[in-house]
Picture (cartoon, rainbow, N blue to C red):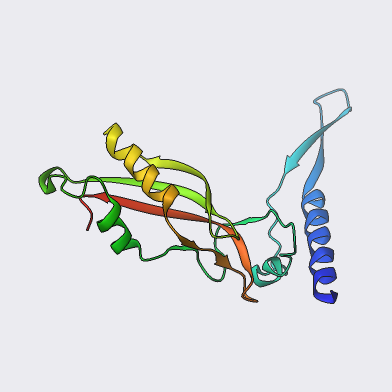
Length: 162
């Protein structure tokens, strides 16, 4: 509980640093002496909030999606799965295609919000890649304490299967 409180305090401090990063600078107009206020956004980097500390905040009901958790999510037995389930496994090797997809692996090992990042430009292959990714079995990402977290996964589906 103490660690969670510390992480929450650090998140509040990070928010405060971002707000303080918004600075107002004054500039005098030529001749009339009036000041114009211009909001200028400055990038703020919180070097004291580490990835492990952010991962500590995973509690029941956490909806955070991690881009790079300590333990990356994976499609279980991916090569074997693609070889057995790909309906286009006999696709012409001379006309090989690739579809890159991204989704969110949930803590319950399902995948949601699957989208195609780079299509093959063959509708049947794009649809098959979506079907394969949506019906696969996944291991969720993990934080540094070994707890399951929601995390992004990017997968390349090759036709023919490798």
